Image (tube, rainbow, N blue to C red; front, side, top):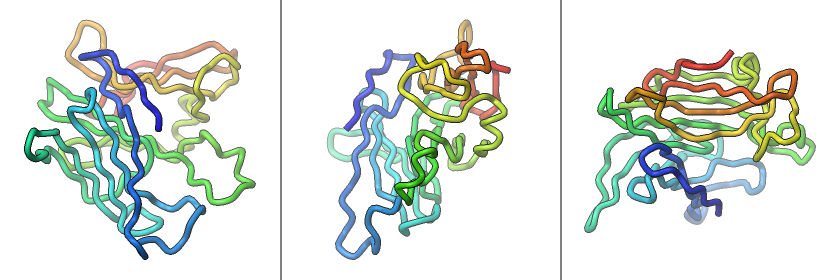
Length: 203
């Protein structure tokens, strides 16, 4: 279990991930990178994103955003697909809607894939039940975003860390912020607008 403390009012981040135990017979394999049902919370636990796969592999399934209530939880958004990986939730005052950011890791199915640990297969942005924009692994590499790490102290080009969903200075715009090392090993910030998925700062 990983807990990340978010700055109130600024960072909307999936703070905790819980893997739900599948029903008996729901999955036929084990230990080969299968999909798992997850719940990831945001806004200090006031909201959460639940992703439920229909199969061991692929994106069939559903993903739903809920607001926690005293007696019952309120569904505020839904997507007819299983969003695998880390899911971050952000609110856009300009759009008046919640955006979901998916950081999907490369699927590890073999112990020999150690070079793929930390690599991102896709970075995708969703809002109002629809996909806004998705970046492939190759497209992310052109932005200098290749291997996710916990810090940039090694100064290796392509290493990056996720700073979360942040409010851009002097505006009501919110963006996913990542920081990566450039070819010289120096940190560079790249912001992705959560309402479009477009890069708003960076190379």
